Length: 285
Image (cartoon, rainbow, N blue to C red; front, side, top):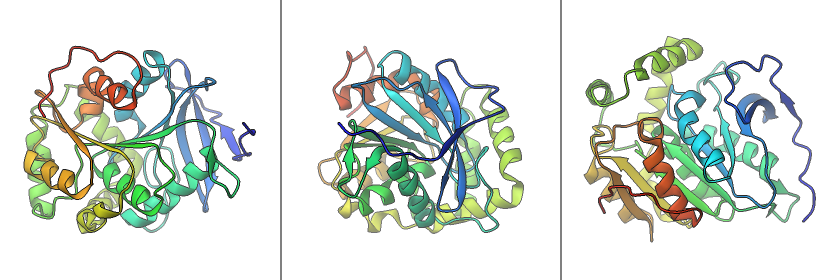
């Protein structure tokens, strides 16, 4: 297998608050400097990228990232989209389509070799919330890039307006772990209040249903049973739109199952990918 191309990455010089087994890396793509957590690469392992939601950051993905790297021996990458976390803050807030273009360029730089688009190892993309809207655009526009797509607690329901979204976000707080509000405030501080509102508006403007039929990638849909932002009816619409997709539900889970129910979610992901042993997880089909 040929060596991976130079992606012009640089390690984070201020490598604090990095989980064991990971390093912080900056990568330049399309004029944006993106930060990512990256596990120490293993040979002959599956590559899996975890994509956060709106306003959120790498912090929400760390519990699942650590389990996938430690217990399932995956190569795990947790990038932060432009405007989020430690990544660049562009002057203008990017749309879902623009975020998808940037993240596709990041994926190309990390995992694609030459014009033939040969991948070094199987590549999976696991996204949460607004990240699912970006991931669906990546998969729709690049049908051969990914070996699998996992969408968790996907947003984009056209029945939810701005006030409805904020109300459901408040309701979800009853089911999230106790430390979740603090993580949210850290992320709001990183992003800035103005960009928070602009990003939420871009999320609600996106029409995810219009592209679902273009997704050819094998897809797993997962939601938390108590998630008020991604209802069971909405997940059913997503399943109807993505041909051959599989739908699962985590009992008692909130919107951020990637952090609140990381063990259950990772067991489902491992079973979907075909690695490790399925844990005793309560699932609703």
